[in-house]
Structure formats: structure tokens, C-alpha cells
Length: 281
Image (cartoon, rainbow, N blue to C red; front, side, top):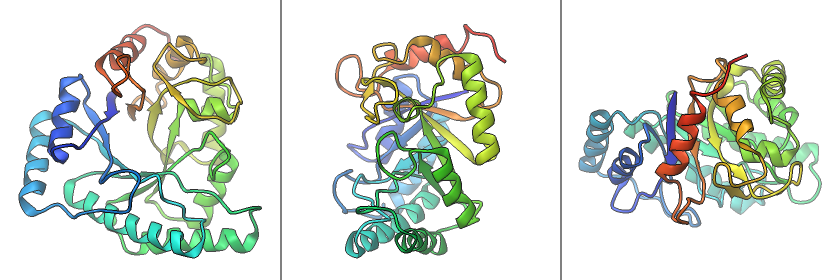
């Protein structure tokens, strides 16, 4: 199993790798640039070489980008166009750095989802896929609110319509809980995986975001909490950490941190302990 965290790139991408090692992580998620603007600078040759060398030396793998929060591939034309341009740049940088791909919140439709709006949305994703390398993954993050991807059926529809092997899925425990998917014990979680496999396919499941929830089950609010401090219960995390069907994926925390400074060693240590103290279906 690979446990990771979303960490800061202050000081450069390579510094995030060192931060990961310092908290006991062996996988990593980072922003490619500040998460609330469109600025994205291509790293120079020296920075790329340093990142690749540090990544290899520390054994931090896999590494993912998390796309900027401004992305809306179903938004108005100007926003959708900027989203496409940004993702093309980011996913090309990912390939250069040996980063597996970008985990992406797809956005939301303005008003009601229409067939015309949906076709434009798909076309925008296709524009991205057309201009990125074959080794860069476009990873859809399931939503826990009223954005695109709140249900498995919606994610399945998008993946089936795109028909591209680079389109993958990242599931977030908090988002699933908020969206009304009961994964609170071993049997319920195994049933959820069977549903996912039937509708989407487990081969499409690339990574997990592991977060407790500040909000009640099926609330459609997806505010993250530290492991064991939210409404989900530790048994929920035991259930999926010990399932052989998924234990080769990366488990990445995006928790607020017990000291309030973001993903930390204490959250990872709790998960590691849970991963060795439960039976597997």
C-alpha cells in the first residue's frame, strides 16, 4: 500500500517530495501552481532533473497533480476555454516530471444539464485528450456536492462516452459519504466496490483521497476532517484500507491536520495502523 498526502510546493516541486518523506508518505499530490489562479509556469530543465532525481532517491511514487479549483469544463465559453488550455499545459508538464496525471474537479453546468451542454462539455475534455501525451492520465474526481460526478452513473456516462484509456477515476471517502454512498463497514464497502466495478470498472480506479467528513451522511457537503474526528467513524476507514481489491492504489490524505497546518504524520499513522488491524473480505 502507498500512503500519501497533498503537500505544498513552496520552494519548488522537489521540496514537496522532501515534505512527503518527512511525514512518512511514499506517494504525493501537489498543485502545479497556486490553486486559485490560472498562472502556470513550465519548470526549467534543472528543476525537472532535480525533481526526477529526488523522486527516485526518496522512492516517492506515484505522484499526482491536483488541478486548479478554477477548472470548469462545463462552464461558459471563456472559462471552459481557459480550463482546456490549463489542463493541456499541466498534463504535458506532468509527463515531463514523471507525474501520472491530474486529478480534476470537472466543474458544473450552469442551470440544468441539457444534451447540448453535455456535448460541449465532452468536446472540451476531448480537446484536452487530443493534445496531451499518452502517459498522462485525466483523472476524474468524484464529487460530494452538487457538481459533476456526484453519482457513479454520471461518472460512468462520461467515461463511456469518451472511450479513452487515459480517463481514470479518483474517489474521495468524504465525497462518497456526503453523496450518500454508505461505506461504513466491510460488507457495505465491498458491495460499493461491486457496484463501481459493474458501472465503471475497477481498472479505472486510479487513486483514493482519504478524508473524514465534518458533515452528516448524505449531506451533499464535502468538508474534510481529520481521520477519526469526523462523522464517518474509524471502522469506515478499516473497511476499505483492508480490501484486497484496491490495496495497490495510492491513499492520499487532504486532511486539515491535527495542528491545523494541513495533511500530517498523525493522520497517516492512524491510517497505517488501521490497515494492519482488520480482516479482508
